Image (spheres, one colour):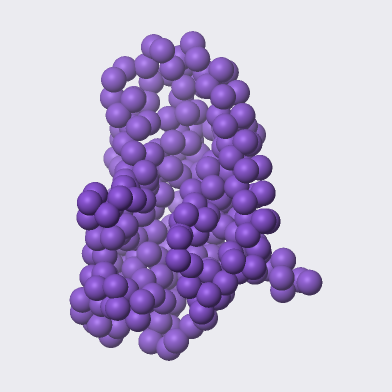
Length: 304
């Protein structure tokens, strides 16, 4: 029973919802933006679950040999009920949130709308057009671009939105800063690396589909040693340099470097074949580790 619940938690994408909320909280702390209302976090959680589950509910030819796809076949009613429930929650609470902020929404400048719309539009283009004539425009089917698209959308959702909506609630204007840009790039890079790691799982399937992901293009070893580890190292080095220049507290620097070190360790581990639960719990779990470490670093440094 516990194992079935464990699989459902990860296969049903509820873990992604938890990660999205946790990373949003981390961003609010790091940018001193203040927390959003519980309604906001319910919208974030519900939208994440519905969005990630859509790929499996819309698949006309699910592969029963794939453990995750097989779970969706076996739990079709549960999945549809979950999608309906979270879809209603998302719609209801989004309407409540808009009603609460309506006096500010109609006064915000044009660039606010660009910020608000660019990420969901990119997310929509990730699934793209379903007709054969237009399918070539799906960002999801452009193998080398796919990790960057996912990283961009996640970075916007968890780095930009929490602060934008917090400023809306307070009736103040959102301004870019070096800190905001650095945190966006850090989340963008971190999640992009996780997506490239995840593509390793689908190497055989992507190769047969002629989907030119990084691992299909250059092979497993080069993906790990020429792409993943250099990207992790650059991200870690960039953050450390920024932290030292900004004279951030040591405890904050230490906590924020832990996820990057773990990212490099996990990248090395990709030499050996892993099951789907490893990818969902350990690799994607690094998002939760990052959120916890970043939040603890902020809280402990503020209390010193």
